[in-house]
Image (cartoon, rainbow, N blue to C red; front, top):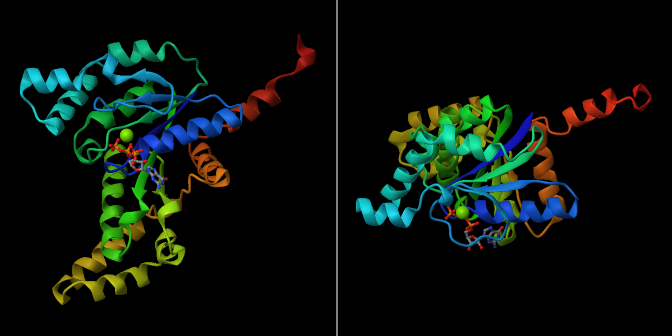
Length: 266
Ligand SMILES: Nc1nc2c(ncn2[C@@H]2O[C@H](COP(=O)(O)OP(=O)(O)OP(=O)(O)O)[C@@H](O)[C@H]2O)c(=O)[nH]1
Ligand SMILES: [Mg+2]
């Protein structure tokens, strides 16, 4: 059984920085993880790139040859990836053993996890290859300064949940930039009633019914709890990693292996 994190979230939310911090953390812990670059537009890396979509297709070539802009070009690249899952991904995955841990650093274009099926098919492929996959959804804490932004962040995360149907860990990134932690605390484990009343205060009266439905929806998916991530603190990274490991049952199998192993048997 392999393990994988699919790191997604809006542009600039801190996905690549998270990946490199996670890599460093694991290195300190003497734990091996492999980071995969799935962003055809990425240029600089703070982590060793284990697999790289740019070896399959180049965004520059696509933009030049097909006269596409950066976003259209990216979608084209990702669709190309989708068409080549069987060849490219299967071949690349052959370099890894059954219990390897991969972290996929994805592009930030929101359509990739809202309605374009490429990531969905990508994940299905990983599952067929016996990977336990978890979505790690990053939301920039700088964007949650009020309830309307929080709700729109939740909706984007929810659309990824609905689309990908995977265990989901929501992270509030860049906590080092938050000056007043209390501003954010309300949103870490939100109380639906409080959210609704704040939302109603912010918005014109004709939205009250819609607000109620939105909050109910968010509440019913009971996914809208965010874990704060402060990259300056090793403990914060450790905690997030443990939550994710839990989701993909990493470590549990290892325990079983240790228990099953009987040195006297040989
Ligand atoms: N202060 C602070 N800045 C951060 C943190 N994480 C990321 N950044 C900064 O935010 C910017 C975007 O970070 P990236 O890691 O490239 O974000 P990304 O989600 O990979 O971006 P795209 O791949 O373009 O979607 C960079 O300038 C980072 O230095 C953080 O935890 N704290
Ligand atoms: Mg990135």
